[in-house]
Amino acid sequence: MSSLEVKGVTKRYQKETVVDDVSFHVDTGDTLVLFGPSGAGKTVLLRMIAGLVEPESGQVFIGGQDMSDVEAEYRGIGMAFQNFALFPHMSAFDNIASPLTAGRNSTSVVTAGVEKVARLLKIDHVLQHVPRELSNGQKQRTALARALAGSPPILLLDDPLRNVDAKLRFEMRLELPQLLKAQGATVIYVTQDYKEAMALGNRIAVVNQGKIEQIGTPADIYLTPASIDIARLFGDPVINLFDVIGKQDDQGGYIELSGQRLALADHQLEGVGSSVVLGIRPESLRFVNPDTPGAIRLTIEAETPLNEKIVTLALTERGREVLVSRPAGTSAPTHGTVFVAADPQSLLIFDSTEGRLTGASSVNKPEVAA
Image (cartoon, rainbow, N blue to C red):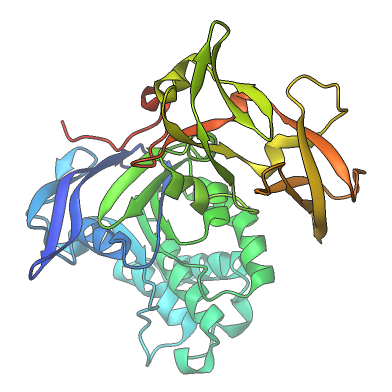
């Protein structure tokens, strides 16, 4: 199996830079998720790694070998395309079998390989159908099965669950990591679904406008987002954000919310003396007694059950909205005046000018080419 490294890769189309000096590495057997909005440059980046698109500058290394002069078919890469790219005249079986037959495997090996991956992806009942007879979800899974069938050392998966129905998508989030781990491949997985990114990646690279804005483990990205924009992308319900003033006295740095003093950690003190943005995840807030240290006074407006959780909408003394999330089945006040508290370690302080997280040394930044 092989590691993968991208160093300073840039791609332009006419005057537009779609991938801008991107660098990262993926260790052998790990999965890196490229997460970001449509048009961020994720697919173009995959195509450059695969050798289908030539970069203006930068290098791709597979197993330590520079791929600059290596054609796509010799890079040892399996790729599932976002637009399926199935052979229209071939059955699903033959589409999936194509990397195995190209490797001159015996008929029994080809059949066993196709049937195994088809069962895992729940398309074994449509193997004799041609693409026009398949649903979009079945086409997507056929393309994914073809990429997996040859057990390539590098797998590039371009949003492979995009057209799959919600039930199967949920199941695949649970099953696909096990399948990829069993394959032992080094994987780059593209998605616009933050839940998918959190479930599938050993690490996540947040991509926007051709650049990697942050790279780290799912916990890194969620708990210490590098910016307000990244904080908003991860989490449901969305993070609470409040414009506040960073202050300091003989007890240390603090901010105030709904008349309550909230202490700042040492790494957040760079926001003292200026306008900052306070971020609190809804699940970081808990209902408490009024005499609890750090209790914030709120007025409940509404409560909404959302399957596995219940979300309460409340207002601060100044009328600012606060979302509080708790597990379904747990009791809490449903109306009137309430008090909530948050663990001080869960508070996020962002610079109000650029929206960057304070204490940036603790945040996983984009990798820089050596």
